[in-house]
Length: 143
Image (cartoon, rainbow, N blue to C red; front, side, top):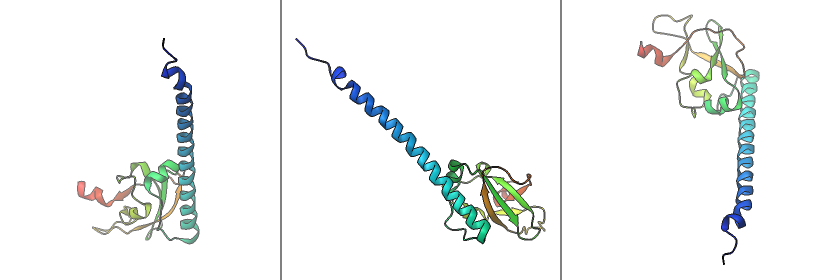
């Protein structure tokens, strides 16, 4: 004679543990998304209100995870503002936002080889400014 099978004895407990693990994983993802959004909001308010400090800043991946997909920048010289999509920036997603500032240049007031730097204003969830063509320092090397 045989007794109850292991599936019959432990099947319900294993299934319940699997459901709990999936639920905990879903809650953790939502909590990480909320934390990333809060960090992006903090950095945006700090940059817009006080003009800095830019460090520490959230990473590109954190911004995208938190729903902040646009970076608003302004040229130092001509005061032109633009919203740049973060998902189109060719950098690893663990790159902090502040590291992008040195690489972004204004095309409208470029003189020869010199293009004036821009400064970052804030992160936004949607594009707030009409599109404007900005140059990335890596783009000139590839053309």
